[in-house]
Length: 123
Image 1: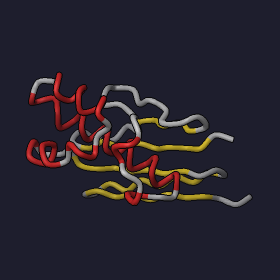
Image 2 (image 1 turned 180 degrees about the horizontal axis):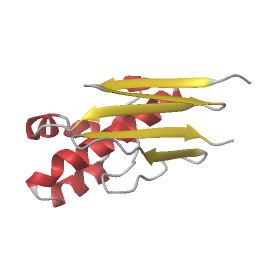
Image 3 (image 1 turned 90 degrees about the vertical axis):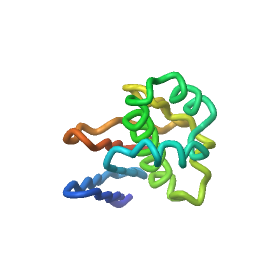
Image 4 (image 1 turned 135 degrees about the horizontal axis):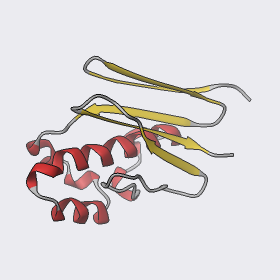
């Protein structure tokens, strides 16, 4: 058993996680309205439905929350974006959903204008 790590950066922020189990982290600046429209295919169908119910001004933050959760989870799996991010539901709301048994995903508090998450395989 060794130490696993994950690293992500965006703008002036750097996020690092160290753990005895597979771990992934991601931090991103909030998506633009245009980016949200262009990246709908990366969302699970239920996440796309959630996003569609939000007012336009709330979609960038919700999309970015979902995206960092997905990317953290896929990094933890060791697949990165080779695995289709639309396969996994992690949610767009204020609390993430565990994507699979044995995995925990949590949002990380970061400055306004960013979103971040960590995913950890639980033994």
